Image (cartoon, rainbow, N blue to C red; front, side, top):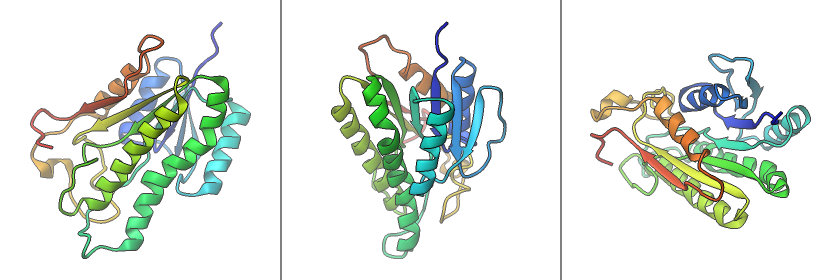
Length: 232
């Protein structure tokens, strides 16, 4: 009997992360949601571990707990992230630091914790949930865009450093129907404010699942999905 595969999803308690968790669990993948809040729902194949990925001790504890109870993950889904909407000339650098600690350093801490043993096993998938905001400077969006731009450089660097054993994919969603805008650290808004439509989190989950199910030796390195009316 084939061993059940294991997935860690950071920030998986709602939105895109939870949609990915449900998709994976429906295909008999054991899912560990690592988040600062408990998920809206769980199942036999979805577990929860409290974790703030901006905290290095929390990442160490997550690693120990996962490896003790499940083993080395097959899939590392780096989904946790926060938004911010502030002008560079007027905003709060302390808030910017919090964004970078979560969106960039959080992903790096997870990579440093889990990738060595995935490499030792010579197998694994890492999925970076980015954004179409990466490499797209726009007023009030400089810090968030910079964090996602950095994340994509990290993803490509990881791909190059782990060839041919780790499959690395960037998923770049456009406007998605989640609470992302309402939960920004600063600045208000909603998906509807952009007046370009939105996509469902389940569509991004489908992209993730597609990317991990290509035939051996094939790698999907980036997928961009957005509402057809979205301009950027």
